[in-house]
View (cartoon, rainbow, N blue to C red):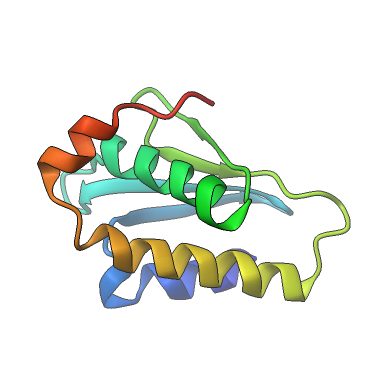
Length: 113
């Protein structure tokens, strides 16, 4: 899971992913607007959390001091096919996010988790 998410982070549309961390199946994606300054991408993380739930029926949560860490806590039955499905959904939503204006992100508000 971490390896697949790390590959997504290295893709051009994965630049918002500042870090992939965690152990086992408990994984966090740290979203940042700038990998050098580590400025939190709070609105973007919230957008992704909502879209994963609304469009793909994938439940995640937000954590961290700025709510910019997307937390993935899959069930123990999470297999390689589920990893592919999750990474594919996240890939799709990261690509869609690139087309969303900053104003639209702010209008959507914060995702309660």
